[in-house]
Length: 557
Image (cartoon, rainbow, N blue to C red; front, side, top):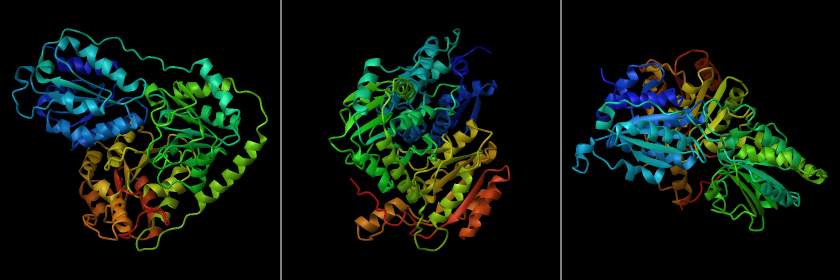
């Protein structure tokens, strides 16, 4: 049979090191799926919804094994991907999004399921491009791969009209190329030290940009060393932005927690009192900065980011450095002046003692069923194991882990800060597929989990041994708490019924356990991990279970 544009697409993906594509079959991508079926270098995972395919690719990219790729057909299939694409754009996660399109000869005739793909996705991508000639597939598709992973990473959409996928191909993939990330200007490093050495109360804030680049073959090992060494050299507390607490080991004496919703008072105080703040790969988001009120106007800022557009976007720095985060940290370390920092160190030691006390003081809320504090104690035993990766979805349980779950190693915790519900299960699938030697445990709220629960069947079919811990309070807990405090307890639309999630798991051929007593949770999780099937642990909580005691939901704004 003649070699087609779809065959050339697959050859280009293979040349770029792509190992997995997730998607839903559809009319305009059937030739591409057929091309994938006729080779064995790239695995195709068929999901039950395009949103799941997008979040699965997101998790695969975050694992840093390689670039996550997702696939959808035209129109409705493309629209179903939009939530995952938007979330990846907001969180700077590299994705390659392949979308089928109607044939070029019927464009603008309102053909069946026709959509202006480029206009739809341009606002939420680094780049959106449509390929109009088979011969340009290598040029544009392989450029898309580079764009997604270089600079500030993000999603790229490639629209592939049916006639291009079906056309005769006689070209070949281009040479694979990756640009080296930028390093800091020597003058900027010198200026940074002149500011930082004047500080009495310095602080270091690491954002998602400090996680390292996403080039294939780069692992997490050692990525945190330069940041920890810099904190030691400066005798400065080190914190992370919201849901990025997996960047560094929490046992390090300079670590003072993660900012954002549910942060400890001592963590916020460190930033509020800082006279100099070194921010690395940080975008100063709403939650991290308490809606841009946490950083004092007089704080002197040294800001490092690979994207020059981020420097001065929210806070104008005294020194702005355009650089890869790790290269900047290494350069700062290499030129660190010798100085007496004993006063800083004494202050840091006191702050660290206060932080440790706050982390280990877990006060559970009253109620029936399994308390969130008890669940945190079970998760603590899990993260101590070197074969466990924890994925935190976006429920109201999140502040519990942010406050009370010490992480002994970096790279073993993933959380979504983009706000999209239903991220946890699919992202966990992607991480599990990327890291087959580890066991991935997701923690989701029941509302978030049930939005994508149909793809537990995909876990069974594809033999993905994901363990899903579902905190089941029969409510959209975050919205319920807003109605409770801001609307005088006028509840509407936040309580609902749920099936027996454990029975649901067993019906689909997986492992399921329903837990209604705190003492049964640990054994149920261990039982799930001891067998090879995907699992659901249905953790029944009080219908009012939610935030840690004393924590109020942020006001709607």
